[in-house]
Length: 236
Image 1 (cartoon, rainbow, N blue to C red):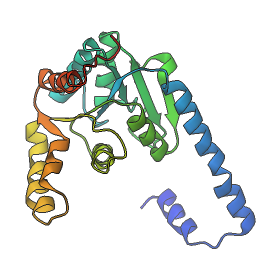
Image 2 (cartoon, rainbow, N blue to C red; image 1 turned 135 degrees about the vertical axis):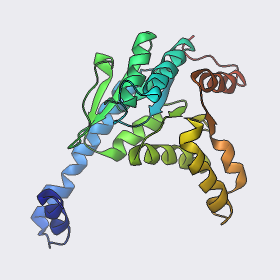
Image 3 (cartoon, helix red, strand yellow; image 1 turned 90 degrees about the vertical axis):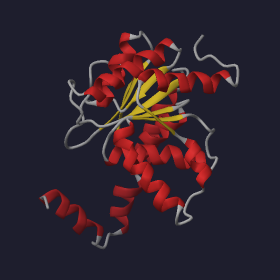
């Protein structure tokens, strides 16, 4: 455990005075508000976009990096912009593909002690910085008309299940969610079927909330078919 981790744990169990609460907790509300206001003002103008989630650790020579770039490029050719976490790895690939396709390229960056840094493919006026994960996740969901989920770690799982939960509970519209990589996602899908459904924790119909594919063409085709049902064409 690092000294910083130790400090955070000890602070949570320390009795605070009212002045400390006012200083540390109450005033944090204004920082949170400022992040929401800045996000709303900048992102309300971006037009229809798809959020691409995935690992910050994916290298540029990884097949999934190249696949994420291709998906993003093809999405722009169908009229969508692309939103990512603005950092390296899959996020960089997504912004790079959007930039190559001359589409909107948004980065929702967050301050972290490791891994996270800006990538150079985000539009200069669409690069936002956040301190709070929960504010950032609101922006991902509020301004996306669909989600592409590439292989990733805990953060990617968090973003995936946030989107699925909000759709399942009808808090947002039933936007398409595409997971790319049958080999990567197959084990999770088996667990969902054999444990969550078997235990009665979700319904079998909930499997229809997302689709697993292996190619960029399959992913983009799913988005195009979805919006064709509504006779909609984004940004055209």
